[in-house]
Amino acid sequence: MNIVASILFLVCLAAGTAWQLSERKRRTAELELQRTMQLFDVSLEVNSTIRKQDLLIKIMETSSRIMNAEASSVILVDKEKGELFFDLALGEKGDEVREIRLKIGEGIAGWVAQTGQSVKIDDAAQDERWSSKVAKRVDYPTRSMLCVPLVSKGKIIGVLQVLNKRDDAHFTDRDLQLLESIASPIAASLENAMLYDALEKTTAAKERMESELRIATDIQMGFLPRQGLSLSSASSVAAACTDADGRTAAIAETRAYIRPAREVGGDFYDYFRLGDEKLFFVLGDVSDKGIPAALFMAVTMTLLKGKMSPGMSPGELLTAVNQELYKDDSTMFATIFCGVLDVGTGKLLYSDGGHCPPYVVRESGEVEQLKGKKGLPLGVMDDMFYGDNEVTLGLGDRVVLFTDGITEAEDRQQEQYGFQRLYELLKKELSSQQSMLLDHMVEDVDRFADGATQSDDIAVLIVDRKPFKM
Image (cartoon, rainbow, N blue to C red; front, side, top):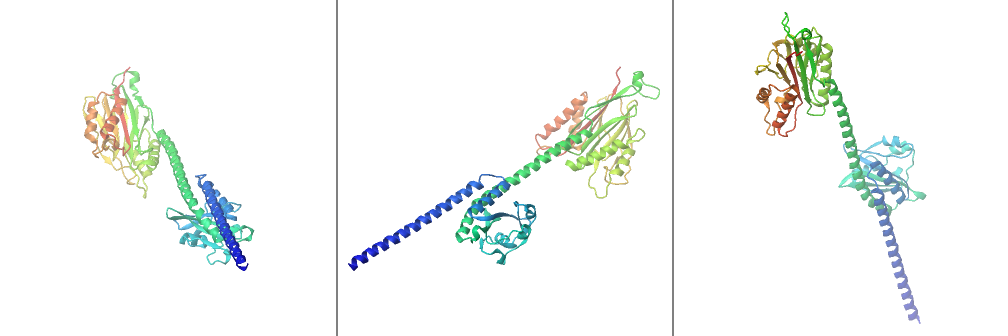
């Protein structure tokens, strides 16, 4: 009987042990299933948005809920400054918290970011790594906490911490393991969101810059006359003949073309009437490109137009403008060519500030460079004196001014278009109207470049002196 009882006892003991083992396995399986579902829940939450601010909110809300904690925070790493910062902080004092920056290694979060190790702390204030910098700002007591690194592609991009387990309980080792597990998908999603955020900011900045450049282009083009100018000598009103002073019934016509290498550039031109029978014209090229060149161009054009008067010579004008433009610390300058044409006599006074010599195309078919005394570009020397040169344009003669964007245009082999090609084109286009010559000049340069990038601004100005026809 004792043997039977012993056997029954052993059987019951074995059955109980087996049941306990089975129950333990069942609970372990339930815990693993619960952990898997929590990880799945986290993955769904953090992958539901690509926007960083929305994602940070979801991370904090999800972490607090899963860990049964009162609060959660994400602190990001600024590698350039070696600091941690709160990109997002909720609550009334969120703005104050966002001002806080921790050095890498400072406080518990800084220590985790520095070492890459997770921590579980039951009494934060007693931990030697504790920093009260944040707690003082928000007046929030921190008791227990978990803090884990957020690692993406081998780099620590931040830390995730949960604060104060509810019901005054302590976080467990299993809690820490769970938080470490959910940190992995969180880090991957956060890295993607940060990249997307940077791309959005870059795109927005690019679009804003493009918009501003379009406005700058419109403003710059507004400085330039867009229509040609036609100016006749006063004597042509009375009769188509030559008077006692050698004045001839004539007409001067101008037309120009400009194409910046960028949205805005430094080439410029202008022409306007001086008195009744004189035409002022100018073509210039600022040393730089883009916005700085456009600003220097705008100032130069304003000074030229504001200071020029009927009794002033081109050399006197450039001397006065140069004194205004010169600055000791400036690296900007502008080559320039300007002239005053007396339409009735054909007398052309001009001054050259280091610019490309224009071509004069005679009615006879002769093409020659208009050379003379040259000065330095505007803005190079403060006490520069600019002299005047003189030439006479006959009826049917033409002056072609251009910037070095024409002659220095390069093909794919970096060979330049040069003066000789321009000379040959002008010989071929002797009878072309102004608009046609402008088109053919630019087309010939583009044909030569054969798709090579335009590296310099292009500007051309044509002045014709023709007989006046009743």
